[in-house]
Image (spheres, rainbow, N blue to C red):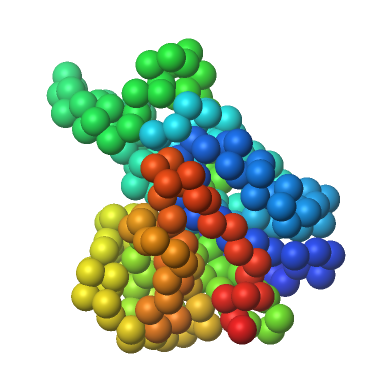
Length: 221
């Protein structure tokens, strides 16, 4: 469900919005900040795939030692379409295709399945990172009201964490308790947006050409 990371004493930590197969944009942003793969860490809010031609390359980022992502709704759409026995029901496949999964039609399907299955082992629902003595949480879409529930056996609704939009739709500025800041994606915003202690950083890279990559310390300023 959740993975915790101790402070990075060797370099910097960054968070990046929904990548959606836009590997070239990611490479450009990492170059802009002088990202050092031997010292720095990159935390991704998920949706590595779909709507972009280099989705398989982006999914493979999950295996890099400097990359730490969570699963987004598009990884879950692909999981439901490719890795679950749907007993002849084509709806999950059609749902994935209609939401940007057509990139897979040009790839070796066995490779896509194998990569997805292996990548999901590296993509929990949530991560928590220590930065300068404070803690930053990360989920794809919407955090629980109390971060501590993530550690409970009957924890928060996973569907909410991957698909939820209630907080941003209601412009709810109530802070998530039990954590200093939370970073999410999923809902496209014109610019990085903060509601309470929740930071929305999906700036619609696949559509706008703008991929947000922000240093962790800026979220705590």
